[in-house]
Amino acid sequence: MKRATVGRAVLGAAALGAAAMLVVSITHDDGAVSMASTHVSTTPEPTTETTSPQLATQAAPTTTPSPTLSPAQSAAIAERVQATARKVVPATKIGMEVYDRQANKVVTSLNAGQTFSSMSVVKLLIAVDRLARDDWALPDTATQNRVTRMLSTSDDALASSFWLGDGGSSIVTRDVQLMDLTDTKPPATSGEWGDTKISAQDMVKVFRYVEDELPDDAQNLLYNAMYHASETAADGTDQYFGIPDGIPGSTWAIKQGWGSSGSTAYYNTTGLLGKDARYVVIVLSSAPLGDYHALGRALTAGTAQLASVVGGA
Image (cartoon, rainbow, N blue to C red; front, side):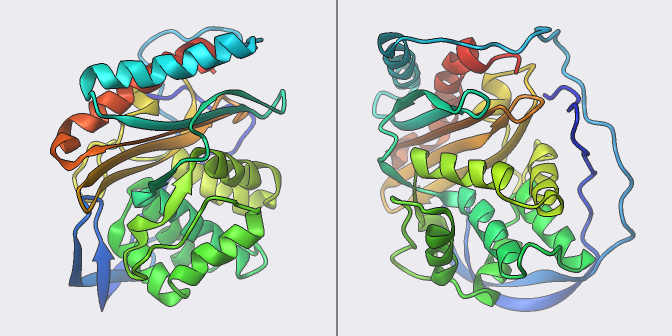
């Protein structure tokens, strides 16, 4: 649930129009890789009107918290995130970082440099690269609609279309150079974009780049798409695990990821929190594949422990 955003234009996500058929290798959020015929938007529907954000059902604090944590307190919060997740799935591994953009500091972190398979979080990297290739000038309306839907509904087919059209693994390589990422790596198999390796500290850099470096039009396109992340993803998954369900009453713009690679399951929640996008919150998680269906609950339980430092933002 979200409170109304203050001081930022929030536009409704545009729907896809007519479609063309394309055969692509799709890495699904459930980790499967297949050759499939997919529909790619070629003609947008009429531009959507501005919509009002959904209001939270619970009252939110009237002030934004400004935590001043000692190193011991920061470490204790981080350990509590992992310990709480492990009450649900004992084998859960967590990589986490919370960054306060207003104070320009890391609030808390745990295993921030450890890499996890991105799953659909890589769609944000795909979108950044698509805009960077045109020097941040907004693309045509049809492409804007495709970027919006790829992010807001986590559409795999659109991600695969951009991945193939923009150079596959070279997308990640360009993003690494653009945003000075240190842990991010392209997938070992080029077509399996969900196996891109990311870390919590690198994803903090990505969100800070979007907020602090992009021109307003490009920034708003990406923020608005993530602000309007749908509760149900394109593949039918409830994607409100982690930040949305764990920190209710906050204003957020999120990119989620879920799925499996080999014998490992992954659930990742990433995004901006606060009416001024004050906090970057990244919580990445993994567990053995047999714990796949419980891992989302574990991640949500762990993420909820961050409410003491970002709750009500």
